[in-house]
Image (cartoon, rainbow, N blue to C red; front, side):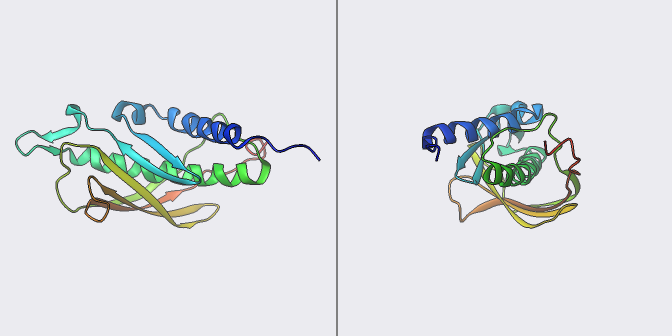
Length: 167
């Protein structure tokens, strides 16, 4: 029986797979969003930057930035869940190229309070995910996880898996 790989090697491969997934979307880099991974759980982090302010008089995060942050979190969570399932089944860590991301059908954002000029965090919960359709809920907060500044619900068309995609 072959000896299992050290946990650090597996962790590095999974972190690398996540970075390839996130790195494939230039807008994520423009906004500066990064993802903190703990096992299969992702937390999106939007580091504060002056360019993210929409109303300098308050100052408050731009509503479009908030919506984009929530939508990106949902899409990456859905994609990561699919990749994670594949990694668990096969032991592999490769991100297929080109990666087909879920397409947004609709996305509804609830702005609960102004986003302050500081780092923001978000987590997505997949309510339903099938072969063709997925429903996701996302929550965003800043200093206190119990005090959300925005939340959203979205529905997504999942990419079709073709025989060439699953290797």
